[in-house]
Length: 92
Image (cartoon, rainbow, N blue to C red):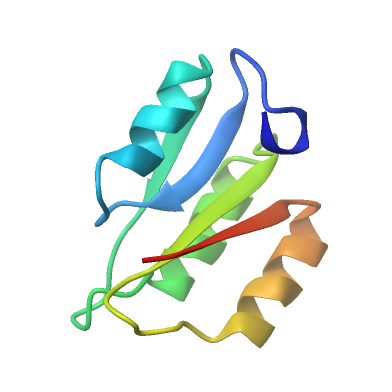
């Protein structure tokens, strides 16, 4: 639904998260691409870069900030622009 995600599309999201994120992606018939977490439970941005390169057809990054901890959003925005991925944030 977000940014025209359809069946068969790939959506990158947190691997450590509430089930709502991957469940929503799968409900649309899309494939969740899970990014590892750091020791502070935030999205591992090095792994995010790896996943964006490995899944060049991914349309959206559905990023959830965990437990009030925010990742380096300047870096995330830069990666999304570089790979043509739309950023959708969920502040949990």
